[in-house]
Image (tube, rainbow, N blue to C red; front, side, top):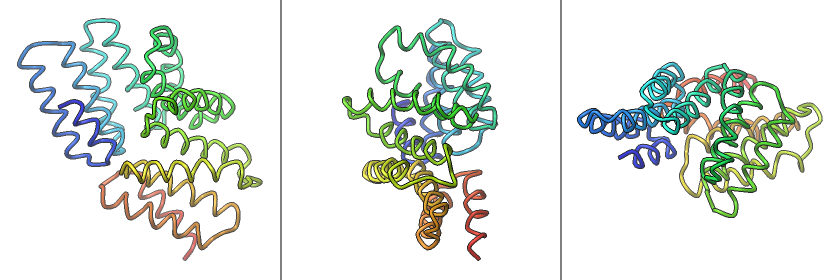
Length: 249
């Protein structure tokens, strides 16, 4: 059920993700197993973080940390708490927390954990304006993800690297810097139907077209992003895209 919850979150099917995660939590509570309760709580956090409900995501991630009976359980909870903080406008706090537990993932050499930490921490650094650190972290995660064919994170990290390229020098960004990352991200995410992340990639690609003066293309990609966000019921992001689209009216 937890795996199903995770998959639904990746697909952007948030209600289904929450439903499966709540089933997971119910079973864990029936067995009075705090390890499994902590596990289920961070999956609930994942669903709400993807949806954009940062307040609820933080509540569940904090519960995951509070219920954790072992150091390993606590690290899992802290991982998703840091990511939820990142998307709740607390990027610096998220970056500090994630950086503090990164050595534990590296020490165990759990590749999947290293990859998602790279995505979370790289995003936190980007949102906090720590661009060089973001780029290094994301590139390292991509190097680990590609040989293992972890498609969701390959697409996700390429999107973030496109955003980092835009942030480096948004007024002078050139095609070779950002476009290949966005194009790869869109191709991968579209193929696996990770629609919420795909919409984020469309929006990022739209901003690239905008700063390069290709306004018709920018408007087209903003519209694509908005259609997906509205259909999925994503919070926050649709308003950002609508504001950017209003500039074209």
